[in-house]
Amino acid sequence: MTGVGTPRTAPPAVSPLTGEPIKRADAERLAGVLKAIADPARLRLLSLIQSSPEGEASVSDLTAPLGLSQPTVSHHLRILTEAGLLEREKRGVWAYYRLVPSAIAAIADLLTPPRKRATRKTR
Image (cartoon, rainbow, N blue to C red; front, side, top):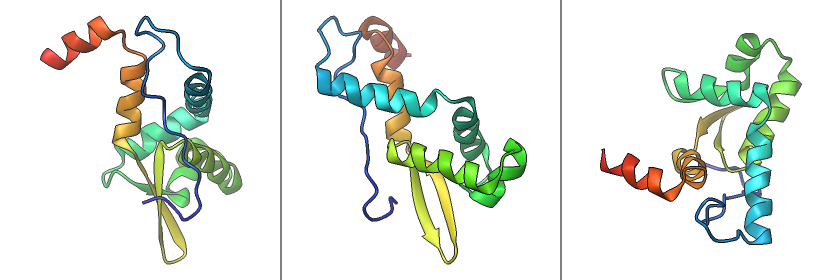
């Protein structure tokens, strides 16, 4: 569940690999999402959250494995949440983060050429 007022940047519905030119607005949205995951710490955060037993984690669960301070981890989590890759749920004083599977799948589809995508879905 996304926090109230949290901006979400959904990846465009058109892949730059479909053979059609991507629209400027779609290219800007996709670039924003890719920029959000281009940082190694953010990729590790996505991996740590996904691999946690509950499929979610709080900032305090993530600081030690990353070796980063709480404010730095919170900053990276905010960027990933604003990009639409994570959902944030507040429980008491803690906030828990989980991946948005549809957003991750959309990025994979956008970066998979149509021929490969058709092959992958028939397996």
